[in-house]
Length: 77
Image (cartoon, rainbow, N blue to C red):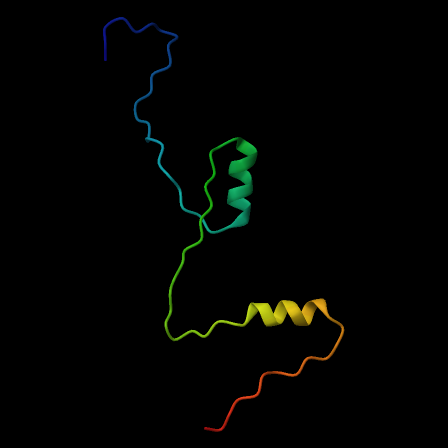
């Protein structure tokens, strides 16, 4: 410390530096937004070769129409 510290000056003995926080809860993210902090949200992308995705175009088509749509036939060959 320097020698010119007044009696009413605030003395900070130890302060942690700001660092990025990784959180998974929506409440922590909303609290940071309310506080005015910079918030960056990203999704972790995992490619899994064993996972079979859904046919989203077919699901959207079924959702848009009122007709009954039969599933695709699979050949026995």
